[in-house]
Length: 403
Image 1: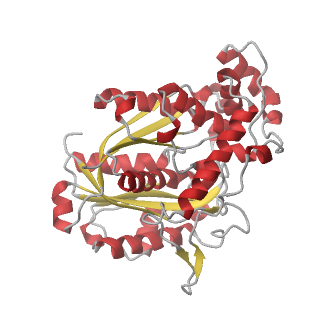
Image 2 (image 1 turned 135 degrees about the vertical axis):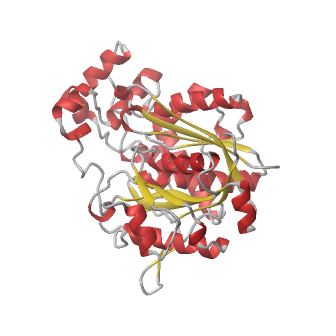
Image 3 (image 1 turned 90 degrees about the vertical axis):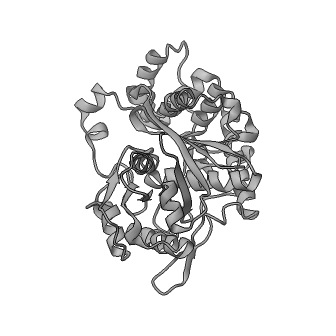
């Protein structure tokens, strides 16, 4: 990009189980965002009137998340940005898309200070409840075609030779790493505990993590997607991938991304904006890319985006110190790491969406904060955040920091 875009801060709420009885199920998404807006002011001394615009990702924009929740939440929080706010949906890549839009506006000279991030309350606004034509209109679904992500993950596992033991081992490791990171306070800088209207603590740690997760325990869980595959999706994928054997349906609740509630914010600025705020950048957005894979392959779009990002930046895989890839099923994570030859010690080192959950619109901002925290902790320079979304959507972002 012609102008470097500084990341001044990146914060998130702990992710709560996205179902009735989850810790955040009683907290409206506008209130999750309001607590982050307030925390951003307190942490940085930011005056909201300095902010040019706000861009937030949110996938299911209806009911509690409808009517441009980004703009509503900002006003509800008492913020008075110079411009309006907008809510973006690009499936699971929404938060990264929103952050990239804000970074692109700064890079093109359209203002010095922006706020981005996202929100998703999956307990209050369930996934697919908007009945969009991609999955609810049979003609559209057949023409795209749209196949459930779990069936695609099973197909990728079959094609790549990832057996049940490998999938369960990866899923257990995600929980173990996330539990270790939480216990050591590695997420502390980014986390903003959620409180209720009386100021009582509601949630201070990611709720879904299972510290005792083991592959042996995972092995007892029943597969989830055989029935969906039997509807004809498996046969379609077998032909598309040219498989000479039936798809094994090995993914289950433990090797799938957790359904959670969450929200995140990222404060971005030009060099002039950072100087005006008197803020020391934690890092910068060096570049980003949006590319898609075939819609029928669903959650493999991040591969295309990452390939494009590396080509644009002139960097090799070996030049990237850390990778944060959203764990959209164990096989998808294993395939991404294999495709780029990323060793295990640089890949999702603090666990990922299988352990902590995937609050769809918030995930981009969540991963940016986790990446910055770990680059700082280890004294490293570069990281890539990559996310795949439905129907082949893909996004990748290069983050670096001065050494």
